Image (cartoon, rainbow, N blue to C red; front, side, top):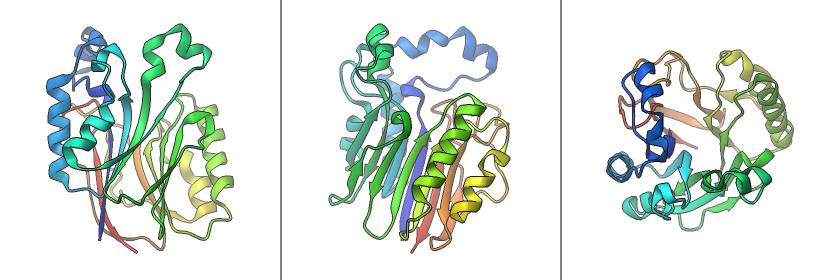
Length: 241
C-alpha cells in the first residue's frame, strides 16, 4: 500500500487565524520561517507518506536562508527531492528576485523514482513510479487560464495506459465543475466524496486542493488532517494498485 500527502505550505509562512490577520501579517511571506518549517517537517515525517507533493516552496531565496525548503524537509523525512521553480530566469523572476526561487516539489521514498519537469508554464511536475505516474499541479488564479491548464492535462494524458494520480492546488474557486471535463476524459475519481473544503485553514470554505485518481487506483483511505501550519489544509490518501 502507498500513502500520498499533498500540502500547500505557503513557503513555510505559517497559518493566520482569520482573513484580517492574513492581511495584517502579509509581511510573514518575507520573514524567515524556520520554526514553522520545522513543524511542517515533523508533520510530514510523522505522516509516513511515500510520496509528498509540496506546493509553494522556497528553493533558496533570502527568506529561506538560501536553503531549499523541499530538500530540508526531505532530509528530515528521508525522501528524495524533485523540485521545479515557477519563474526561474524569466523576466518576472529577474525583476523580482524572490520569485525566481518560488516553486513546487515532489518528495519520494523510492530512490528509483524519476522526476520529469515538463509542465505547462512550469506548473506541472511528473513523477514516474513505474506502475503509476504522479502529477503535481499548481494552477492559475484566473478561471480562463485554469481551463486551458485542465484541457492541457486532459490532452496530455488522453492516450496514457498507465494509472495516474493528479494532485495539487487547483485554485478552483468556481467549484468542482471546473474539473468536470478533465475528469470525464481521463476517467478520474475524486476520493474526497464528502467535498470537504481545504481553504482557508482557519475556517475552510473552498475545496482548492485535490487528489484525483485513475479507476485502477484502489483508494483505501482519504483524510484532511486538521493541521494549521499553512493557510491550506493538507490531504492524505492511502491506496493500492
